[in-house]
Image (tube, rainbow, N blue to C red):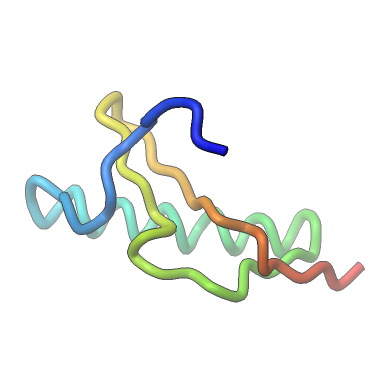
Length: 69
């Protein structure tokens, strides 16, 4: 169910810094999620990383994740 568009796809980056920052933040988010909750995403692709124009980034589509706790 999609209610509203909240960001742009990683493939729609405006410059290299924006793309690299989004990938870095997704890797950090994945690491933090494992460290704090022992959950792995297991299916990260460029479609799962969103760039938000206000400066944020999101790692989405956690439906194939696996909990190790």
